[in-house]
Length: 318
Image (cartoon, rainbow, N blue to C red):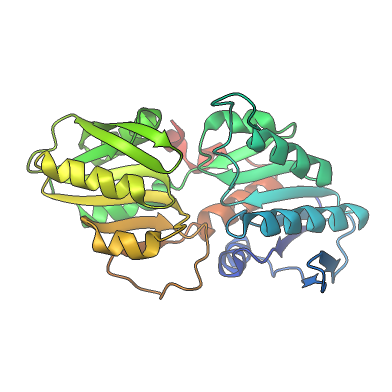
């Protein structure tokens, strides 16, 4: 066992952080974050953390840059307060999509942000459903990438137990994820072949696989503007699908997504609570939010006790 377990919440997702602390069996450590008149952030850790094993819970969700800077400053404060070990808990790692050069003269921002997090004091990283697995290699410290799949699968099994299902990957890169869902739900598999004109703009979609007369679930790691999901739903219905649902770990819901998705052909979007949306009511006909707090809380407890995190998932990690 490491030092005394402490959990600190950034301001990106206070409800999830409180639930994680409860699941891990501790109270949140008091931390004040203030904004000065010129926009700069200041942090004060209100309790003694010398020799503690500290976990900082902060998603880099909107406003991403503010939340990222807040995370860095909190970790710097902890390092200067002589914390024994600092773990950055990123339920949603917002820069993970920019993980390679797709054209000349662009930044690999996922690597840049990874370096910033480590330089600020992170001794390890705990995150969930990274956009691409190789991002784990961008950190020069241990990384545990959790999967929301067990939580989401339990819901899907209850809701669609007797239905003829087809799991759909919205692109070629998500086939492994979709195949894992299809295997555990005893469902067929289809793929959307999409062509992009630019980021967040899809021009063409073709369905590869049989979706006729089936309830279809599009599985992805995140829903951002919703454009891909909406066009995919239209294409699936044109190919004979009975109903279209979506299942995504991270509900980014940027731009006009919260207005567009309810008016689309998607019956319901199932997401986790890695990203906080204070402007959405607790219940919606089109959005079902499931908590991953017990999963993250148990992972934190295991890391503190030097136990295996991968055993949380068993075969689910494959």
